Length: 316
Image (cartoon, rainbow, N blue to C red; front, side):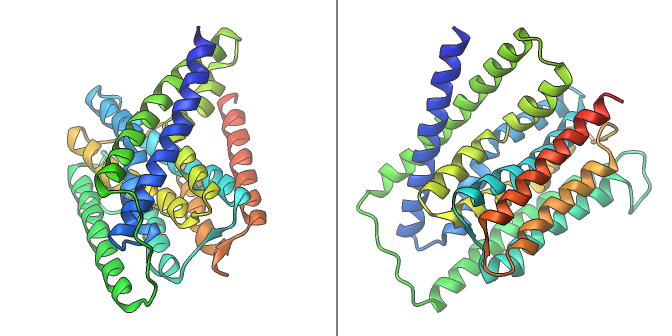
């Protein structure tokens, strides 16, 4: 029975991702919003719902390490694995605006997370307290506001005319909402059954937690980005990954720290450095306006190496 659920869940993930990206793209065209912004805001935030639920629940249960670990692990997976696979399928376009604003913000909030987690500013015993969380939430609101402000300004200056889609707006909104719901639900059951099957096969629990659990909450981002790449709309894919990472740090850690101050004893300095390194890769590899298939392969190899390091560290 678990295999049937696994297959149905996989189909649900694919169907949900396709409708989410298709509906979001139509909304972007109708309101003349750039693909990147719609990817960062609607798709990126929407696909981060599993991370929000896991981190907030961990904070409510007093398991605050889960809140930070989930965010750090997901952010590494999003860029090195998801963006790497996306670039392997189709080179990812990186605009001048991405290099000047979006990617530096992603790097900046990653560095800020490291500084706050290791008490660089105040030396308190609590890594990320409520004041720190409030700062993250303010950055989140500012990022969303500035993104739409810049997009509106750029659309006025640009001579590009986006074709108005034939699909009615209500239908596009329904596709986004239903697609996101099916996608998140499918991911939940897929991870649950995959863990059950792996356990039954006698797979090491540490390996399960590193791979299936850590990556499971990022399956919506993977499905949405792959669907966007197959549609050759890589700005939605890039926006999805960058937007998700910024949302994970600023909103999820911000909300979780309001529930309970966060400590991250199980998350090492190496993990934070890898997260910052991953955040900087799209900027470094996209200096010539795109992340090539070769660059995507390099990113994916980096993720494999990091995973092997985690397995080795767990067995020490």
